[in-house]
Length: 217
Ligand code: BG6
Ligand code: MG
Image 1 (cartoon, rainbow, N blue to C red):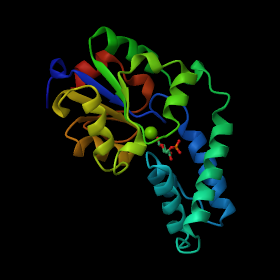
Image 2 (image 1 turned 60 degrees about the horizontal axis):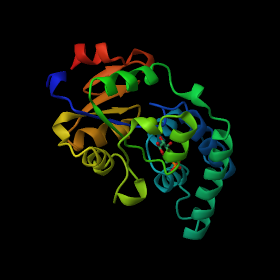
Image 3 (image 1 turned 180 degrees about the vertical axis):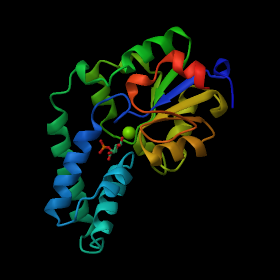
Image 4 (image 1 turned 90 degrees about the vertical axis):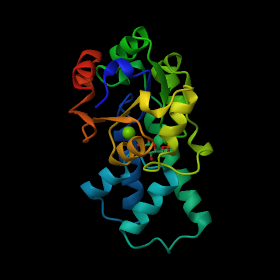
């Protein structure tokens, strides 16, 4: 494994890593699943993490074997309804909703000279980062509309390194989703798993400190 001294960039997932928003995506998808009559399970909930909006809808419909029941237009209406519900839920976000320890980590990485970008599948990422007061930390935010494929494809994390003008070998990626860990690894970066197994793993965001990273990498 590489030494921390070689690391020059960090790419952060947003929902469930920087922001306490994964629960709102889950709530909005769960309500939609109930509306279309699809049984909600823990596996479905985990599998949806990190997955883009339309792909998530397709996974929910497939879980209920109803993927052919809706036209493209109806699917667009469903994803739009989910997004409106999600936006209502996150309307009240404040800087207090940055997940425990992450503010400190961003400060410490900045002081250590590590360049940072955001590698989220969410089209709402810029709005959420602004609400949380975190925009100033990042040299780039990947626009998921501009990459050909969502996580687990490497595209989002590859782009996150490109935005920092760094090769993937010197970038670490932070993720709370299985699909995201796969994306980081296929991009050739080192995967830090938070609540999910990575190249190095932490149980929760609180435990992810600069000192712990230096020790584990
Ligand atoms: C990911 C979340 O970050 O973004 C997923 O983990 C979500 O739950 C996806 O579906 C897309 O987000 P949005 O805000 O574009 O619908
Ligand atoms: Mg996430």
